[in-house]
Image 1 (cartoon, helix red, strand yellow):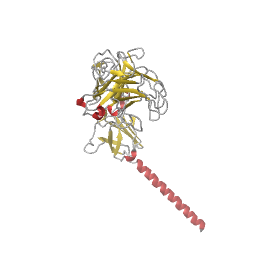
Image 2 (cartoon, one colour):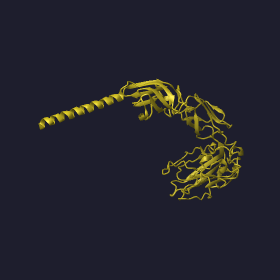
Image 3 (cartoon, helix red, strand yellow):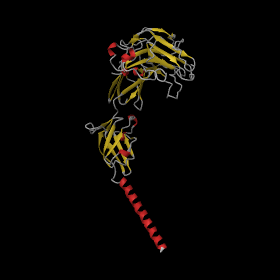
Image 4 (cartoon, one colour):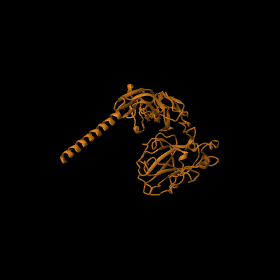
Length: 410
């Protein structure tokens, strides 16, 4: 009797296991059932009434793919570029996904252009839709005051299908485009006028709010007749020491600085100007981030640890820091311009208060008048210091020229 009972229990266990396996297989089949994926339309990923059907996409855009059998997607690609997505929030009929932020249009195979591909365990589908570069944007220019023959690089995004490049009011006909649409390079021709930079692509036109090639025509201080230099360091016009210069420039020079060395008044440690107009009084009602201090700098050797600080009227309430050697709060690396002049841009909202007893690391001013006063007029101090708790990794020697405060956006 006991043996018969054991046999029956064994049979029941076997039947139970077979039933569980059948149910699991059925569940797995349910997960992949329904056939190949289908996309019927693409909608803008926004709340109604802006969740409209779209027939054209741009890099970085969030969209909703509508169709069927989309839930188990293992790959979604735009123009052949696979993107990351969270399939856990997909339904069988909808999936939310972002178009890649960077699409190297010139390198995309022709058969992958203007396509969305969805792949699931049951198959794949291709949906055709126009995917175009977004409106062009400019982020920086390697040197806004170059000399003839110098290679100039304009940095930005969506610099694809370029129709026209204008630098300082002159059309540049010979230029090179990066495959990623992030740079345009050209050799500076003989241009004697100043003007804006303008890039026109198939997706639109973007222009700078400020002029380039203006070293001899406008600015706050150029050491050659514009503005007034007071004291702090020596001036030079040597094109041997710092090639590519526009006349005179100031040289900041210090050895390795001990921890906390802030003797900015030492020889060659500072540029002290007389009073000048930072921005017009009529613009003091605008936003801080619409304006920036700009200058060109040339650092032929390695630079690591020495900070350059900038302030108005010897008022340490708001200070800007320039530290291109700083990678993070704890990591640094030697920096150099390799003996070339490069443009530095510091928006006025980067002039900050003091935090943890370190100048320029706290909160920005609340307005232009808090930073610049009611007239927008005053002097400028640019100096070198070591705010760290250890000696600087290197000495510092660099030239600065063409100091200006300009409007950088409307």
